[in-house]
Image 1 (cartoon, rainbow, N blue to C red):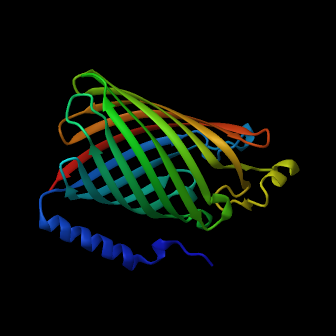
Image 2: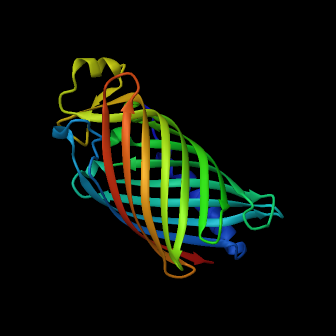
Length: 289
């Protein structure tokens, strides 16, 4: 049977040891800490009101990073992320994650408004209380950003995400495009808005899915081990995300962030769609080593 990479914990011990050696070697290192509380009004991603469930959660995350290379036009940074999330009502959604990240950020000019670019590669493992959801996750992204004026900046990019899970229902492949705008309304106070369009796989849960929906899933349907009275199925579809947020910068190292994210998913070949709203409140702090 397929086992997530995380079951081989020795490999992650090696990664962490190598990172610690790099931290001891110089000062181009940092540790980011983030704490988030949130609420999701449709964790089942259900289309029918009778199947919709809500939940709240707490997430704690730590990221260690080190500048592996710094040249005239770009910087290569390696990171290791350790993260844990605890859900209030549905324990099966609680999870821990370990992710290795590589980021290369570069530009071709130093003048104001000159664009910058970033390439990101992530590979990690996520272990849920739900066995069906245990996953290996690979992600690649390309981003461009620029400063429009003293108060306004913009980012846009493309991303590909490949998730291999214990169940085929939660094995998903998605491609997305996003655009983000930031406005510094006053000093240390930023309002931002993000739009993301994603294609690929979506999944949804229902107590009694009709036969036409079971047929459309092409066998990708399972008795859910989190929502015990429901079946969860996978379909081809598109999802649109809209996020409105506010960031309060406390100092050079810490900030609060408050956001609301709305999503709308639509199946490609059948008449099914669902919506969801997630609200988040986060505290962020960076420790420079």
